[in-house]
Image 1 (cartoon, rainbow, N blue to C red):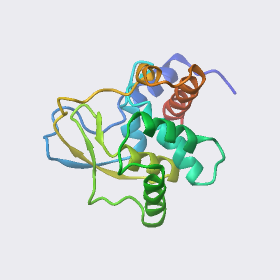
Image 2: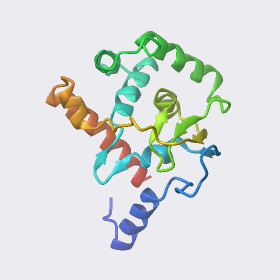
Image 3: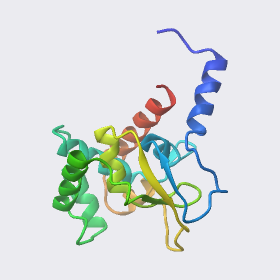
Amino acid sequence: MRALTAVERTWRRWRFDNRLAFRPHVAVGSVIDSAPEDLVARQFEGSECRRLDLFVRTLAAAEFAGENNGGIELYAKYRSARPSERKSVAAFARLFERVARDGFAPQYPIAVAQDASIVDGAHRLACTMVLGVPTISLRIVQLPRRFYAVTSVWFGVHGFTADEIARLQHEAERYRRNLADP
């Protein structure tokens, strides 16, 4: 494989940085269509992914799809750090089956802030990433006051091992490289 020229590297970098079709001027309440990978691309700030939890979900979704990768176990550990009755492993498996069977339901758009921060819908986004769904709907919402990023620091504070965090960072970086170098 030949090395990329400086112009090619710059063009690919620009394409990666400008993937999502909306900017802060899109009004709250608007619903827009997007490719899942465009929304994921906007979760990176420099080399850090502000929603590393998305890759816990994609690993679990890939295991629901038949890949034996330990993603469900990692997801269960994540859920124990963020308990919620309605977001159990079983509930996520049912969601994955529904998206696999029926596709993405545009009447239930993923909620994102004007800066593309995912507010609600990361499970559905992970399903679409694994299943290769080409288009999803996004609803622009106000960023909640209690919103926080789920970075590698969050995982460290919540008892994840250095190896588990490194695995998530590797998954995020692998996905990011695939976005930047189609």
